[in-house]
Image: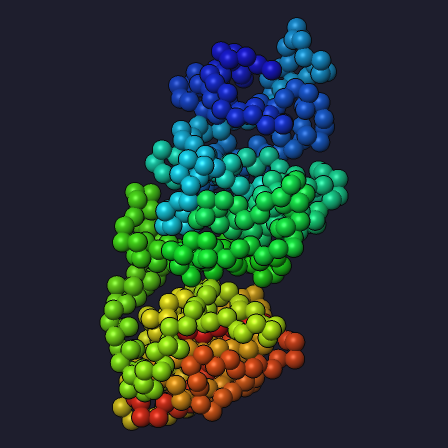
Length: 520
């Protein structure tokens, strides 16, 4: 192996060892041409004699060089250092491949967690968001990392996260260089399908990122065992512990991201990194507003969020006292103090409804923070769109309300009724639905669809069936808060679930829904 002070490629002078693995050693080096520090990864000469390992190393340089994303460590150069013919290494003489990266002056995320323990919640979500964006860029090039872990995430002096070490990454379009069934990833963060030696996809990386987020929030990985195999099998067989139980300060929005990202079935995870990043954006805005403060790096990330993520969730938190007071007043008038206890039911996951009684065989579905949408096709415009996210925010003190209908009826020019729908992407065969409301007593029907036509103008008289909705698949004449309404789908799966009200609660000029949950 080269010694400190030696130059690689005629320009990179080795200064210090900063990392060592089974295949390679990483050095801090000085680029004597551009006069700047760099990181250089040199493959061990003995490993370079293995054709598969040598090709994997070369391929890492080619693949990562395609990526141009601020949270991916940049490849600067690559080459092969001629072997020293007078060297004492017993391996066959041959070139020593190297890759030159930008030098990140900081520490790994693993070192940060070991030093600080659980991170501040907004900070943890911010790092997860940056890595989700980086993985999105890699996946857009059909490149799966396959070893997402805190050891491969660098935290810069400015407080931003960068992912590195694509050494076992490979394009989805290329055959694996390993034998079938061989596992290369670190088992503390491994996706179930990867642990079983099955084909991996971008969703495998998202599972690993969900485990990384879990560790940032709790200070530890979810599973321990006597061996790496034992840990890997726990990822296959056991549910990741509830992060809110281990860290009560975590919001339901953030917990829902962890829960969905770490689903055992890849089909139940986020379909892509962009979808996970969108939920992380909402969670970051919410966590920052809840904490009332943000570190420098979190503030800089907040500036990159789209307007709806940056403004809608904090708006709801800033006005929480007004919404709570209004809802409490309606509860008192409508049903008396008894409903206040129901309104304080334990909420879990993005759906916000209480878990079903044991023995029902039903499991609550983790919905995305942006899963809820208002639906007022027969009216003249949106129906309190700024509030509809309240039904899936996990907070029982917030609610979506309709506009005030002074006539006491939901009859409109185009037809009768309004509601909201949930996006349960990619698809879901729901078996029940629960609604929490401070204004019980209104009739409710449930419709489903996989494709909805939203192009009709407001006030159009086209019926729900003409807009793509099927059903009703469930109904109740009088909604009771917390009521679990059975859904009959015959095993079919649908993406969209519409909650449709055709009348207001008796004696009311509006209706309110504080939480909706789907069960399967």
